[in-house]
Length: 357
Ligand SMILES: [Ca+2]
Ligand SMILES: [Ca+2]
Ligand SMILES: [Ca+2]
Ligand SMILES: [Ca+2]
Picture (tube, rainbow, N blue to C red):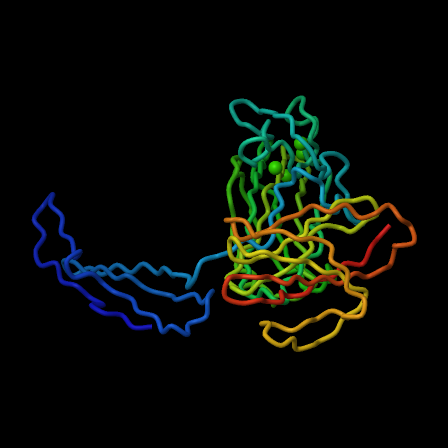
């Protein structure tokens, strides 16, 4: 990283006027080998009349690409409630929330966050009524995401939109927890502990590697609780997304692969690239002449499951329903895509799913 003109003197600025350094701007140069996703910390210091004021900020190298999206319009098998939950009302549900109010405050919104035709989200007791009828009471309720694979996406940033109300008799004495696991839920790290009402849809964003090492067995957990039990407590979650800076094609499955249940197949690429997605019952590691990336499937049992073109968003997303075939329970399917750009042919990262009941 090279800074050119890293400082600039404005001289004397007359009252109620402004000065610009546009003719001689501060310039930041990066070595071309700087990896995408690198975060460059910078500090802007303003010095004037003997005072000095510093503002830290950072810039990300490269352009983020969507890797997982879940607008919650289709239920992808999130876990609603876990052993140990003790809330008696207002447990996490999936669906279309009914609005509630307390005085002039909206406690539960009538609408989910997804723009346009969206209706559904995750909500603590989706029914309406009085503010205290279907809010969290007597303890905690937990929402857990399906497993997601970040092994090939260490630059991942997880984003979601949340709503949190903690009003009523004793407001703001509870915590909404956003937590992440890299060992399939065996242990959890806090992303955010929110201890006060933010009763509007707000986006929060977490660079995963700042909190925990990215692995193939990641999960997100949300815990809402009325403890002590004296508040109108509501939590809503919508529009989860994961963005990455890795430029090579990445494939992942998002959703609980239960019989007759939908999962989302996600493949990143460049707009206009065509692709073929393959499934195999086994893995391998083979060099394929003329192709970038290794074949990570057992080539003796390759079946083509999908073909398509990567859209302008750079993420191809296809919902696939697991067959309703009990004999498949326990079967592990491995997936990898071949992606064809005008310059080269690539093999994507591999992901897998083990079919559940
Ligand atoms: Ca939604
Ligand atoms: Ca509710
Ligand atoms: Ca309550
Ligand atoms: Ca409380």
